Length: 226
Image (cartoon, rainbow, N blue to C red; front, side):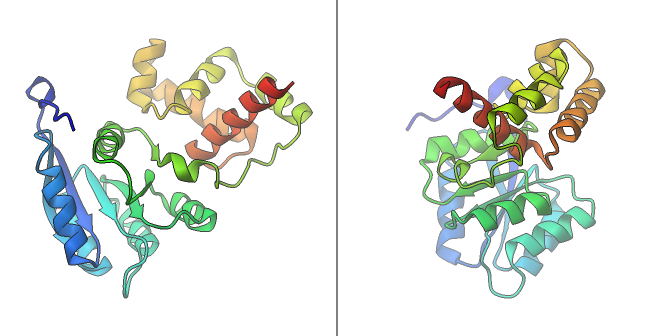
């Protein structure tokens, strides 16, 4: 395992861990303590205490277990979204159920990660989501509900309906790039990126960036098989 240096003297990524298993919380804390650019500022043993911890400590990222006694992870995400928390909310769970994935994303999760990830990959995902990107464990990518456009004609028509700039934006969204990174890559304002993303979702009848990434993967698979 290669431990990274804190990039450019930037402050560490601040994390709150919400999980009702004490050993898991401790294990995550010990793991992340090995990375100088990531710091666990608090942990919580329940959903209700997790909400309080996130609102109190205002972390960059909150890692939230799905199945907890009392308030479950999806309810925690909904509550934090309603409270206007700026934290990036990531579901960290053992469940690879397509229903759970979609419910988490609809609730406002910025990511869905499985607990059996390799440590280095896990930390890479944390850096990515802290920078504004969206993250998903590779194992659950295939269980996401497929976009409504299911045949080659409708997929082609959807792609053709996008402007060149919207196509470029979608390509970068599918790679998990944040709006800031997309803006830098395309040489445009971040506010313009937000407009492009909005138009892409509207034109393709999609609900979020994850579905957009899955939609583009469907297009590329169709192209390879044709």
